[in-house]
Length: 117
Image (tube, rainbow, N blue to C red; front, top):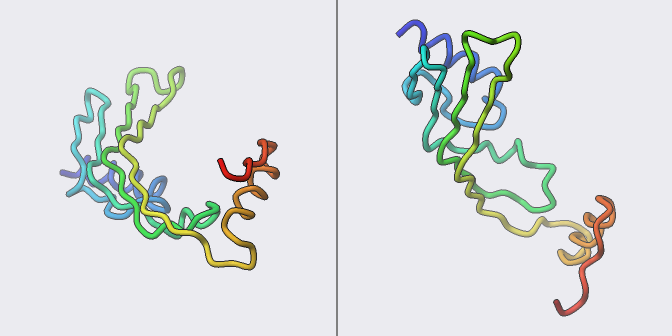
């Protein structure tokens, strides 16, 4: 149980700004094989405030971390994020919603949306 708590503490420090409920009780841990899984966790909506829409709620079906224990210095730690669901609404603001999308697309170098498409 001590190892699970240590892994949960590291995950809380790295993923806690984005996910709620990162603790030892929520971990499925197979440490020696290098496989750590978090299932059905809620997203912190304030972490997504930079998006051009208002995120009302969000969940992640699974976060899986692959840790290559025998080759930590030569191989990367890989984090898989699966089944991200977001409930979004238009952002309140001065610009109408469609114009806000076009402005964001222009800033990112994308083509503006065509009217009526």
